[in-house]
Length: 83
Image 1 (cartoon, helix red, strand yellow):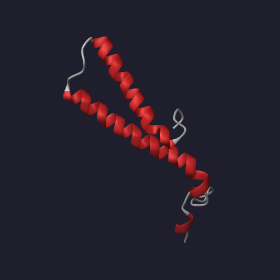
Image 2 (cartoon, rainbow, N blue to C red; image 1 turned 90 degrees about the horizontal axis):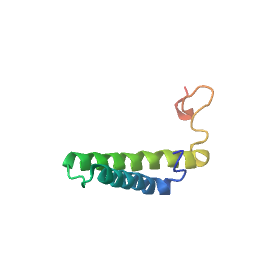
Image 3 (tube, rainbow, N blue to C red; image 1 turned 90 degrees about the vertical axis):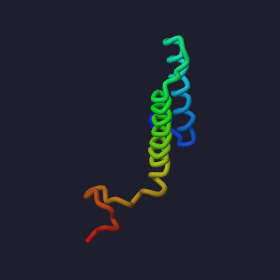
Image 4 (cartoon, rainbow, N blue to C red; image 1 turned 180 degrees about the vertical axis):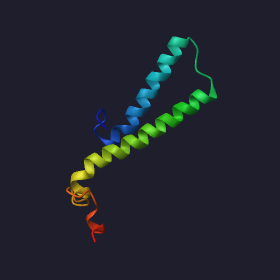
């Protein structure tokens, strides 16, 4: 969220980080990664980064517009759940 800033850029950032990782791994090991577990880990990591990055940046972008007044700041409980 700190690096991205906008939810539209979350997938771009995640894919770029993983492409840099692929290139560095390829150069350092002097061979293209062909382990299925490595690729699975990279896909899961990228999906997690895109999902959480989009979620947190949208929360930050929309907090002032849609989420204001949903929680009482003093008590920390939702305003709709008050007894």
